[in-house]
Length: 109
Image (tube, rainbow, N blue to C red; front, side, top):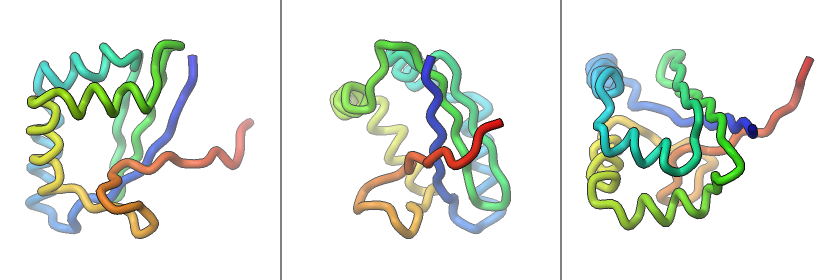
């Protein structure tokens, strides 16, 4: 099983952060299906201030390219992504339109 770590920021606004967290207490079933159907076995999101950290554990069937293509063709996923942009802010080094940025592992014990 592979593990990926990704980062993203939120708008630095306590009310918007609270709304974002509320959406993640009851993620739409179609979104959960798109995640698990892509080969994601475990996904966790952590927050400190307005910085988010996502930990994904995936099986051998997972690929970022296939997940991206599947999401682009799924109207419900696109609706969710548009909604989430209200709260999310790309990192300063992100490419245009890029949300979650893959992190480099720099230490392991």
